[in-house]
Length: 365
Ligand code: 13P
Image (cartoon, rainbow, N blue to C red):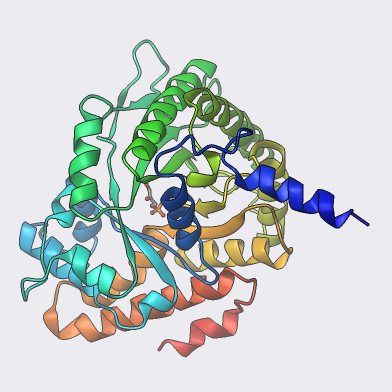
C-alpha cells in the first residue's frame, strides 16, 4: 500500500510543470486543458483538413468538381450535423476552411465553437522529395510558421497538426529520413506551444506495401523513438501535445492480414515501449483502412483496458467515406449524408470505450 502522503507529493511533482514549481510554460494550463478536452471520454477528432489536391481526389470518386463552393457545401454538412458533438471533440481545418462561412454567413469556427467542438488547423505545407534519398519525403512549412500560427490562433484555432510520412520499403524508412522528419516535428510542436496551440504530432508510417505486421511494428517503434527524442530536445511540454500515429498493421498487399485483436496487441506493445506516459492521448489516423476496420481496431485496443494515454481517433477517410458516398454532391442528399456522419461518429465514440459491436452497423440504414 502506497503511503498517502508520498502519493500526494508524487502528484504534486507530476502536476507542477517542473521541479521548482514555477510555470515554465506561459500557456501550460490551457495546453493541458485543450489536450485533455480533445481526448474526452467517448470523443475523438474529425480530420477535415484535406489540401486542395486531396479533396479533389476524394470528390473525383463521386464525380463532383472541387470548387470553393462545393468544398464549403460539403464541409458544412460535416460541421452542422446535429448531435455529432456527442462524439466529436475537435475538427482539423484547412487554411481555406478556417476562413470560410456557412451558406448563411456564419464563420465555420463559430459554428463549431457553439457546439463545444474545438477548431484546429493543418499547418504543414505538404511533402517534398528528400534529397539523395530512395524516394523518401520530408514535410515542409517551418519558414514563417510562427506568424502563421499567431494568425490561426486569432482566427479561432486551439490546436494544430503537422504530418510526416514514412514509407516502408526494402531499405526504408532510412535513419536520415526519420531524423529529418522528427526534427521538423519537434520545431513545429514547440512553436505551437509558444502560441498556445496544442500540437498534434503526426508521424505516419504508411500502409502501402506487402510488409508484415512485425515489420510495421519495428519501423513504427524506430520512428516513435526518434520523434520523442526530438520532442524532448525541443523542450516542449509533453502533457500539452497529442500523438497522431498509424496503427500497427500489415501492409495493404501483405498476404497475411491481421485481426483487430492482433492489431491491438502489436500497437499497444509498440506504444508501451516508445510513447511516454506523460502524453495525454494517442489519436489514430485511419491511413486507408476501411471505415469499419478502423473502428474495429480502435475498439479492440480500448477493450484491452486502461493505458497511460487515452486511445482515440483523428480519422479523415474512416469518418468521411460514407458521408461522401451518401452526399454525391446533391443537396437533396444532405440529410442522408448527415445521418451517415452521425452514425460513423457514434460507432467511433463507442470504440473509445471498447463498447462498439458490429450490430451497430445495421442501425444506420
Ligand atoms: P486518414 O484518417 O484518412 O488517414 O486521414 C487522417 C489525416 O489527418 C491524415 O493527415
